[in-house]
Length: 394
Ligand code: GLA
Image (cartoon, rainbow, N blue to C red; front, side, top):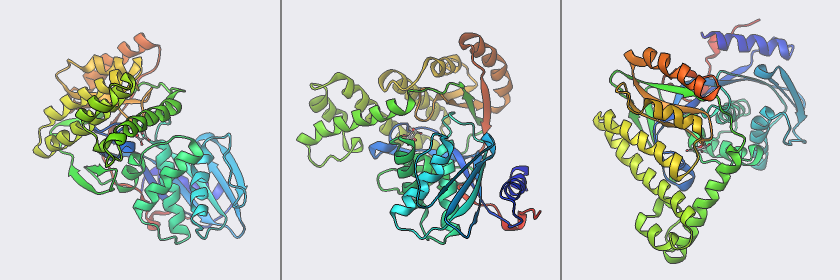
């Protein structure tokens, strides 16, 4: 048993002053190999669950009180089932957002105690918020026998993020957290939610995440703006081609004809998405053929699109990608997730990782004045219950 899982039980019993064994659920963060800002355009993504996760320990109460505690912040939050409102504390919103969604579906809930712990760095683009939402919905589904499917949980968590965190995100993060499979990436069609597990054979290369440690304030408002710009582009195409529902259905020729004459910026945003969707489909074939060199090149192309056309990068992310661009040990690198900060994802030859870090860390820190942290991500299983037999009874 991992120390983390043991400690959360001990902490739970101490905080809620009980000897009752809680149910523990682990829900991981995610990486995304390629396919960025495609999910809310009904497109494709290629994410995977990683070895960093959110854990919740829960048990039922006999009243309608919801009592929450976050280890990371040493903070309590208490409310009742009748008063599910957003809070200024931030972290309870991810849990309360789920309760709110369940109540909208008239699910039979009662009060509960919930302790949350996590080892996913916050604001690093590894989806710590989706992990917490998925851990919560999975745990409450189990605790109250709600019989939700994992796909329903993913959509529910997505809506919780829209309504309680104010980010109009796509479904990728939640889906990756819930459906992750060890050593596989998920080729997900975000329109139909049909998916295929593709083995991630990296032939001596590893996924190295370089964290800019930039937490950009603009990220959620700019994210929502990008989404609106895509929708505007679709609306203009749809006036002429009514069958079109999302950028997924749009070609570059349609953009040239119906969007470019109206607005150059909207055209630029939409073109990035259409190109990225096509790039992902090719990259997925590269991966299946074992051609990770071609896959890596596409990651650099994605970064350039995100930085110059979609404009969701920042100078720190660009610095990290530019620094490794001509390094033979690095097959591909790009910013990952929503953007404006967080991590770059790099495919790096395992034997060269130490050398790379030794060079890039001081260079980054001198150039930006910020610390560079890094993680070698391994690909793990998605959301699940931590085995009962592993519980420590105190
Ligand atoms: C964030 C969102 C996702 C997705 C990515 C960009 O992680 O939560 O839904 O849109 O950005 O690909």
